Image 1 (cartoon, rainbow, N blue to C red):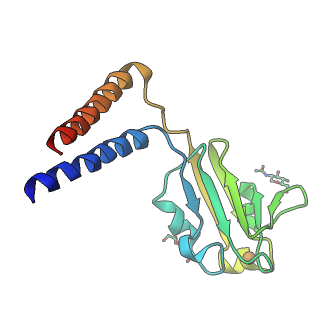
Image 2 (image 1 turned 60 degrees about the vertical axis):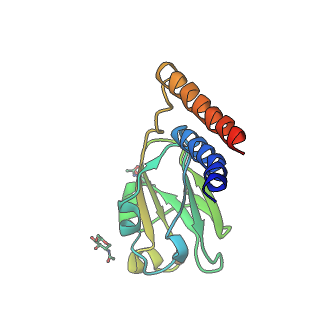
Length: 161
Ligand SMILES: *[C@@H]1O[C@H](CO)[C@@H](O)[C@H](O)[C@H]1NC(C)=O
Ligand SMILES: *[C@@H]1O[C@H](CO)[C@@H](O)[C@H](O)[C@H]1NC(C)=O
Ligand SMILES: [Cu+2]
């Protein structure tokens, strides 16, 4: 009935408020490179990356068949040339998480066969500064206000129930 449905939605409202609070705190994002396709041949990683904002603290997750591919962190020149040396950092597990530790451009290629030069198996991203944490002075009152609003809703639900 009306009264039972309105009281049962109160915990949901509190949950929703909590989620908004949590998401306003800077949280790292995990980006699965290539989404469902993973790290593979003939996928346009430029298109994949173009609508995304990468920030310090985020992770890149490379999923691939480790018998066919690898991930090599290269510099801009090497990226253009699809080249790498033994000095480059190489990932080979097939399920590699790479933490984006600093700002700026990051370049990754597959060093197997001609995957980079002929199949566009290369990714360049620009890493921006970490999302600013909420300023303590301005966020504390709104945090308290939201918490007490949530407490009021729960109290109201308890009275209605
Ligand atoms: C990938 O997409 C970008 C943007 O549309 C385009 O400029 C580029 O040529 C594409 N690369 C390939 C290999 O098709
Ligand atoms: C990239 O690395 C190569 C070594 O493989 C080095 O010779 C070159 O100077 C580097 N280029 C840049 C732009 O850092
Ligand atoms: Cu490859």
